[in-house]
Image (cartoon, rainbow, N blue to C red; front, side):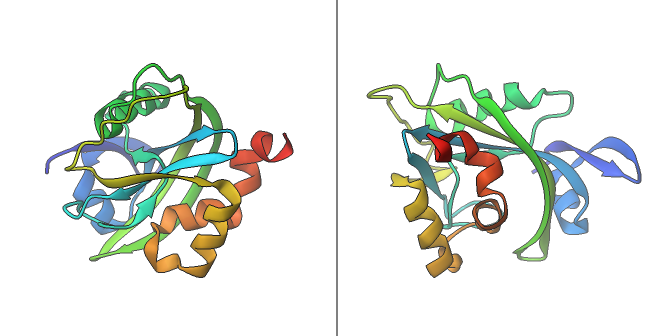
Length: 176
């Protein structure tokens, strides 16, 4: 796995090997996408072969942009690659920073651009089995309650998003 992702070394953004970035816990760029349909959110269970957080439920998809890739392009690319979703235009919801131990000696220290994408009626899904084990739609408040009750079933970043940043990410949905 020799993926190069944008990471900060000191105050300089540098392309670095993804695994090395996570082993050192370096601050790096990331993208997270939530596909929504009304108050329901599409979540995925990460494939068992993922290098960290395998088998955990998480947001619709998340990734690291390639070097010099714009976050919005990355969001569209990963929706297509992970879930076979095309034709959606994710809207930027927020930029957050968090640091979390994700196990196996790996640390996520992300500056993450978060996007919301509104599902089309009868939107087809074609999850890549090397990325995604399962998908399901769940109400946002039901998801937040489930994460509180059973945090061990969910990715650390999803728990952080819902416990500390739900209003910032989903504010427009929550007020409608």
